Image (cartoon, rainbow, N blue to C red; front, side, top):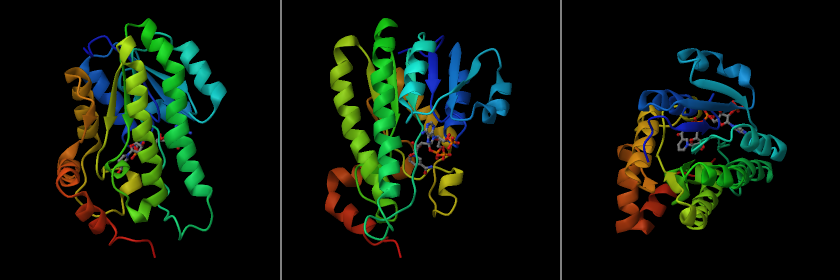
Length: 245
Ligand SMILES: NC(=O)c1ccc[n+]([C@@H]2O[C@H](COP(=O)([O-])OP(=O)(O)OC[C@H]3O[C@@H](n4cnc5c(N)ncnc54)[C@H](OP(=O)(O)O)[C@@H]3O)[C@@H](O)[C@H]2O)c1
């Protein structure tokens, strides 16, 4: 897919990676970028980069009405970037209750799924286009410190595969992006290595151009993906050393 003159919508555009998706889309030549945020006032600085092309839009992906309104108001979208997500750093057993696990599934799985469903007919009308789902390498191996987040991204990975299958006949490319640790506010207490958020955005957009379905931005994710092919149990055991207190 060509990105020159693409019309994109980025969810969570005010976040650590989201704003770099918007910046990268400007550089790749998109003609319009709908920057979605729960609070569009938080997008002022981002819009100032290119007010002709970046349009701030209110969007909460867990609010059905908000999602339906977006699909009806921004009917020219041919590239949907499902970037919004939460990770609440909770274990399965050590968490006080199920609140965090439910919230992560609500945003990372159901919210992303709702966006895919709402925009599928929009993309079809616009020639097929593409969906980019921000997952994580933790969709493929559990990180006990962020255990319920990993499970929500695993659900989103399998959803991504199913959406890909269902949308293939209409020519929609569905890309899953699985970075390791990304250098944003959320991961400030995580040890290195960390991939820069602009690298994540650039590698994901290049995958759209090259029609690559599974992307592992940065060295850490690429190495972990290799380990998962060679010896998944060894990686599971290594991750199991990092349990919450
Ligand atoms: N940082 C990492 O190490 C890392 C690694 C792998 C994958 N990822 C994934 O990359 C994506 C972006 O992460 P990030 O590091 O940029 O995190 P971030 O800085 O916390 O940004 C998350 C964004 O999602 C938005 N959001 C949360 N709930 C939402 C909802 N219900 N509706 C709409 N927007 C919502 C947030 O908006 P508000 O400002 O309104 O809360 C924020 O803009 C996430 O899917 C994350 O899981 C991150």
